[in-house]
Image (cartoon, rainbow, N blue to C red; front, top):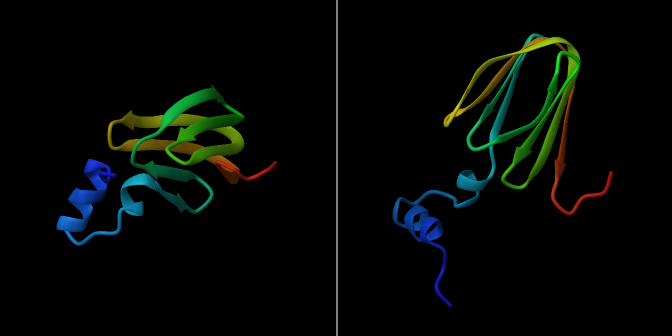
Length: 93
């Protein structure tokens, strides 16, 4: 069975393949969160943002939340961030 193309590429570059599948989530204080990598905005309100990740979902809760940047490189949210919850596929509530 042939391995996926990205696994072969990461092998050739001597990089761990999970780095292509796992987003980097950076919380800066209580005011900014950045999700690097592929993500899909599922729901948005000033009190909460739900994001689909390659291997699960992320739930950001707070107040006065604003999307500052959303592009192919990732998603940046700003506001008063109260919590960031990550639920990986296969994990229960």
